[in-house]
Length: 605
Image 1: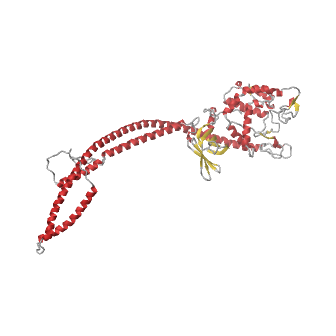
Image 2 (image 1 turned 90 degrees about the vertical axis):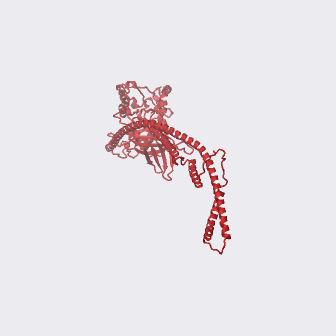
Image 3 (image 1 turned 45 degrees about the vertical axis):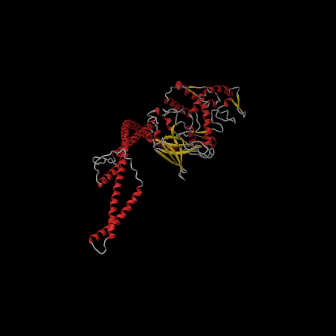
């Protein structure tokens, strides 16, 4: 972890343990030679004790000389001040130290790396400030006056672990004053510390399993450190098993990520080959389509002239047919007139059967003939005026004219075929009267469909290539351990809302009352650490550009990833307006510290 919780007030023995375990351990992890560093600490009594000086001497570590009272010279003091202000703002209403520790961890994770760099860069100026404040603790006699003037004490009483000054200025390096901590040794378990105000308050504090917090004898607190240690070790074993399981799952994620990358790269190469073939098909089918379209245009243009000539020919034949029909009508009318006279003027007393039969046939024919003429008259009215084409261009021949029925039959065939050919439904072969039904139109339609199909195929391949390139360009972690989780979504029900996080996708907030959904943003980048080569870089994700809050910024989400055997969202909070913090467990960040020390960065305690 980046920050470590220490239980109890630190004494010399605990400080030596920290130096041995964490300082030397940190140097080993970073492969830094002890002779290449200068260690900085303040003038707390356990720091200046003879045993501590001997420890540094035997370990060949140089210690920086430090002013007796100069907390602001150490960059960590400015950092604590910044953290303290943020914690006070977030810790309203907390009930116990565990909740406070959760807030401290959250604030610590949110620290800006650039701010820390600036603090370190300010050290040269701090050296000048050190020289300016050194005079406040210079020995000017046997006595020393508190900086607030509240008391005068012996010079030797500075940092004697007893609070003499109201402002606490006599104990710049200890916790002896009102805001101090009481150290519980908890032998057999883990040392701890509690606020001094909880000492001898009649309550056995669980942090002091040895009962030392109630030493005035008013109540007797049993020593439960053995039981606490057993329970703690059980939990620790469970956590270790959980981490081991998480490491195993992460390794499987890494293998899966490698396979996915190889598979996508192979698929990309295959699609690129298919794309070139698809482009060739598009060009070929486009050329074929243009060829047929050009041929159709030529046919239509030449056919238009032929159709105009045929129309003129048909008009002439229709006019000739009408003349023949009119002539026949005149002959029929003459015959009818003769029959009418015979009917009216024959001798009624002389019953010639031939005459009577002729008169009867005349009456029957006259009725049908009259109806026929009325029908023909109506048809002529519907036809309107006949537009006869000028016959000057028509060549005159001396051929014998065909019979009426031959002319009529020929005309019907010519009209039918001419109309069909005019509208492109059939082509008329004058010699054998054969029809090439829809040939050109069908061929054009089929060729156009083939061309459009080839174009769509090319577009589909290009879309698939873009999608694979997008996946290959995503940063899935140091060893592609997050590739398996791509597009997987996880939900968290907070009671009022259900939050959904899709890895490398979107984050949403859905109301459990009216089911309205709010966009919280889309994955933007990793923000765990500045360097992409640092595993901690992949412990935090940033989702940005969500829906705008009313009179506020666009919504965003910071995702804090912790080691776990399952992918599970633990909590969702909103520490700042429209800025959501999501805590999630995943095996993808279960780093194997023993196998590969380069996978994790150990910060100094």
